[in-house]
Image (cartoon, rainbow, N blue to C red; front, side, top):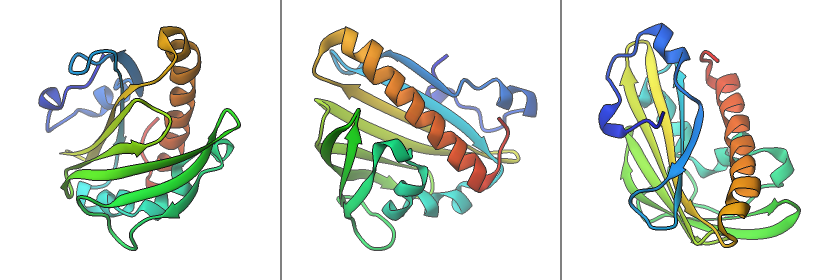
Length: 181
């Protein structure tokens, strides 16, 4: 099941919150050759309470797995804004990578996007959304990505890596803000 922004209800009963699939992959119908990762996590806070954490690039280190050796190189001090550039270093499967993203579509506390300007992917467009619901917020991530290497590289290297990264991210976010498994 892929969560469509237009299909996310404003009220989710407690049992169905537990049924939200944490991570799915599918072909991206909007971009030829790209794939899409969708994640969702329900947190017991309002979007207004959650958004400031995600609006500060310095918090990326807290929710990025240690095996990536993530290091922020340059980012704006304080909250991000549309057009902000974030530069960082990390290691993907031991290979050192420099990555730059630009913040687009800045709409606190509902959503923002970041787009890779320099990095390992042919395409990386990451949309973060915060849906206010009874008892908290449904936070979703949608990443449209395309990489060099074809379908075998995507299926056997990229998708498992992204699944591990976003699983770790969910664990850290739950540890910080609470929320059901």
